[in-house]
Figure 1 (tube, helix red, strand yellow):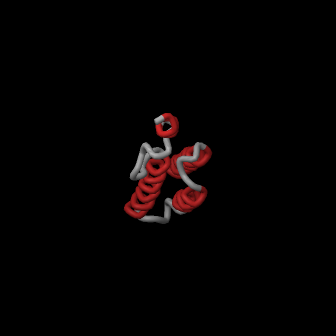
Figure 2 (cartoon, one colour):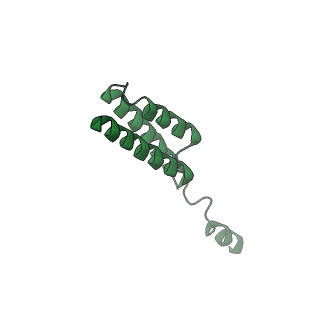
Figure 3 (spheres, helix red, strand yellow):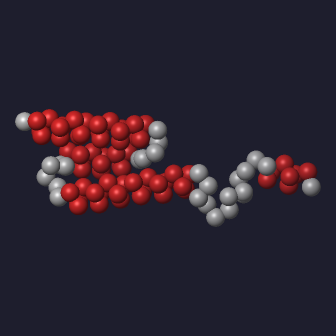
Length: 89
């Protein structure tokens, strides 16, 4: 019984952590749903499968953050400093 209690606590902590990530905008609703599926089925999935799925979600979240925070090919194109310099010249 002690192991089942521990598993349930881990599931609750994981779910809470990923919900916080969603609230902060670090992951999408689709990513949250995918991780919740893993959490719900964690005791039925092989450990390697759990790791693989969570790593995929982590990479996708990191890619999203990079794209939102200057991951584009022209980082200075949309900065406010570029506008006034062009107008005054």
